[in-house]
Length: 370
Image (cartoon, rainbow, N blue to C red; front, side, top):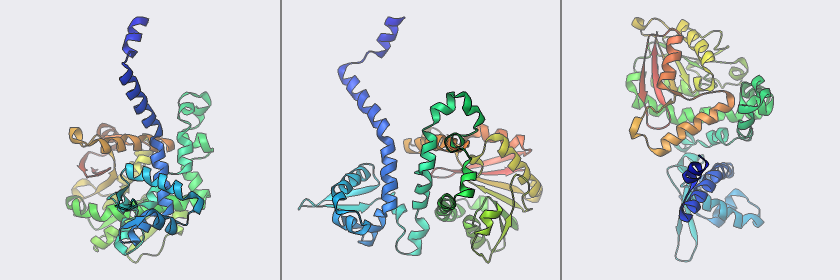
């Protein structure tokens, strides 16, 4: 049997070297994230945008304020970012390199007009490329195997001694990073989804409550698009206390595990993926209490990922984003669910039916009926 095992491992010299290259490439992938985080913090996309969409390395150095001794290192950073498609690079006849925006880096532009600011996803990069999350993910092996890890329900608790939500509550800086990220995602996605999924949002009834809606960014888009719908935002008291005044929104402090204000429609945007099944069932049962019966128009709208919903047509980038996001959310004991996993928690919570509307990108819209 040892000979069989050796045969299975046998490769030609070229295959060995190619395999080595692929292994090292996989090992270095995290550097792409670090480079993206640095570019976001340095506001490199703004520097290019403010120079008419094209900037030299000297332009970037002047805008970002890097130390003169780091000029050559900035070139190396930009080489990673252009190779990975975040920016593009044109080499001019004189040998100067001019950097330009791509469709990805256009989502990192915060300078300029209102339309740019509403598309700026830089705060969301700050949520994903975050030292506290990365530190937790370094503990995966210990979390899987260490007997002491049984007392920690999440990687985050094992690494930091508290849950993600406890850290956000006691660390104002972390709270700002998280809330800014969620608001940025809502600014970009909600207006698009309201237009593209009119069949979903055209039947909201006369009232909607956005559960875990923070400072009301998503609910404000709904209120603007549907002035007849009374929009309420439910979130924890400390979150609601910091919310800016909105003429068309009502903020209610509370706990979604204990009570959700009555409404024709309950919205859960990027909420349930943060929680294990038993907690999701508790939240959904409170949602069911809050809405009228199906024949009276009651429903829950969930904006979240349905892993594999795009089937065989799914592109590699989309498939990788799904499974990577799933392991990322594992650090807080969350989960990105496949349809059969969603179905189970819906029916266990007492709902009778659901409908999934796939959307281009990383999420789907699920309507759940009592």
